[in-house]
Structures are given as structure tokens and as C-alpha cells.
Image (cartoon, rainbow, N blue to C red; front, side, top):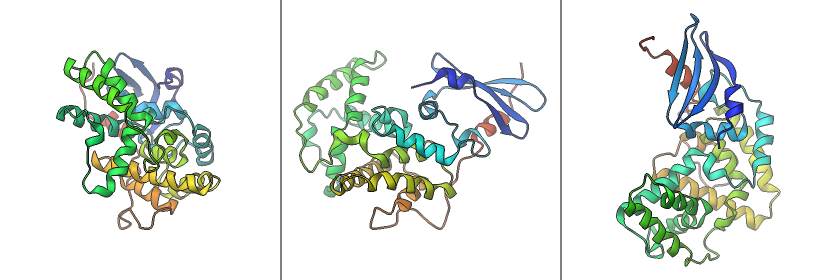
Length: 285
């Protein structure tokens, strides 16, 4: 998922005299080459390489890296529209992958292999849970677990057993068409919002672009896509990754019969996180 050439060539101001001089990937880390106002050059090492998956995928700089947007909103919307159908969505969006990973960890810890027997409380959320089980992202997570040599033998065996049981689950009309995960435009824009793109003031423009694609889809399919978005919100809420920014995006879409975000407090746009990291006192070598 990492576009190493694009990352190496990144050059921009972080603000307050700090500058980024490329991002270099090696081993299990990403190194941000930062120049300080006095000319001192520092290598900031970040071990969560998945932070860079979505930026690499779309080749745009997210707001957490900078003090003001470097992307053009129209260009960003065009790129997202062109990505619809790309099967890497659940990998590129870190929060999506975390929902699957946390769900799988919970099931593995409990030793649950009979997927059809799992019930969700309250019962009205059962279709949302089944949707996750039947999507390509869930199967991809299982495949990672059963082939990962860093996993315990017990976890790998559990994943093998669940893959076998997964093939016995039949998709019904109530399962929200899980195979169409990567065809749902609402999820691509939601992913961009979760990954640090679109300011609070830009969220209406993101919603218009996503809604334009939705409105071009037959109404029956569009209804399923809205239900899939609700399933995603439910999944994010279960693992503590549901943000006010993505709820505001959903409100701007105007596809639900209720408001979701807390309108009394505009969400943080997340600017300057990289600058904050660069400013933390460290011993210079």
C-alpha cells in the first residue's frame, strides 16, 4: 500500500520554520526527515506505517501532516470518485482495517468459530454484524491471521477453522450485499474523512461529491449502500473509532432520518500533528 517513491519526494513546510524533506520507509517503520528552523536535521521515526497507506493510495497529503490543506478539494473529490471499485479500500483506510482486526481479535480470544450462532444485542444490529462477517475485508483479515508467523499457533488454527466455517454462510437478501463493499461511493469519502482529509468547512463539498455518485445509482442499490454506511458507523462505534468528523460528513449526506453529530462543538480538523511531534524536546546527537 505504500508508494515509497512518492513519499520520498514529498517536500513541504510544516509551519513555524519546520520543513519535511521526504518520508523514507524501512523495516517496520517510516522515517520523516524534518529540518528545524536552525537547520538541524532530524529523523522522526513512526512505527505505525498504516498512517501512510491512504495518503500513498490517493497521493495527497493529509491535514495531520500540515498546518493548512495542500490538496485541492475538487481534485481530491475526483480522485476519490476514480477509486470507487478499488478492492484495497478496507486496507487503505486504517480505521476500517482496525474494525476488522478488533472484531477478529475478540472472536479469537473467545474461541468462537460457529459464526452463524453469534448474536448481537440489541437484535436490530444483527444484519450490520453479519454484513461485516461476509465482506471481503473480514476474509482478508482471516487470511492475514492464518498466514502470520508472528501469531500463535492457536490463533492461526482458529483462523483456519473460521475460514472453513465462513464458506458455509450463505448470503441472504437481508445481508446488505457484502460483496459490493468496494462499489459503495459513500465509504470512500467516509474513509478519506477518517484519514485526515477535508476540513470541517469542506465536509459539505465532500458530501455533495459522494451524494452525486449515490444519486446516479439505482434507488434499490443506493438504499443498500446507505445501510452499509450505517453498518460501518456501528462497527466504528464498537471499537471506539467513531469520530465527530465522520458523523458530520454523514449528516451532510442527508441520507439518515436523524442527525448524528454533536452540532454544538465543531470537530477538530487535526492540523499540525506532525509539527507537534517535531517540536517535542529531544536530545540532539
